[in-house]
Length: 147
Image (cartoon, rainbow, N blue to C red; front, side, top):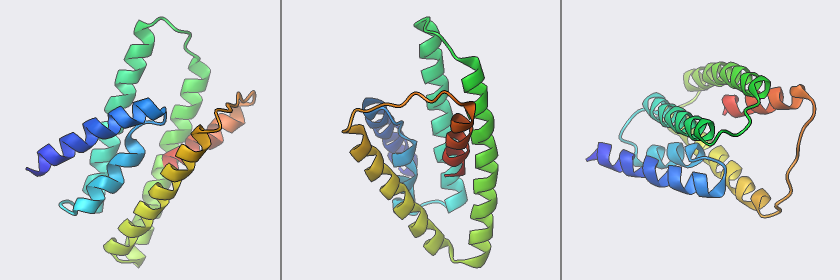
């Protein structure tokens, strides 16, 4: 039964994420956490894996549409996201060793909720930015991976 609930969460979050343009990963983890069936580490893995699969599907779709692919940008964001992921995991482990699992989960849910709220508010402005320095993309990848 839990697997069906998780499957539905991933499918619905992916759909909502693709419609909003920000991906479903920010929705998946807090929802799975709220059920409390698995450990925080297990849920982080499930969430990361589903986001990885969504990224593969999105990339495949982009390739099939023959749109221009900016390889330098992709590698920069990918590398910095992986680095941010390692740093985030390290911080997560330190917090778990110092605080209760429940408190760490609550803090994560609050941070993700605030990020989701900010993302929804900012998407209403319809203003987009095109950065010309690769450093901006590295910082974005690092911060997104850190989360």
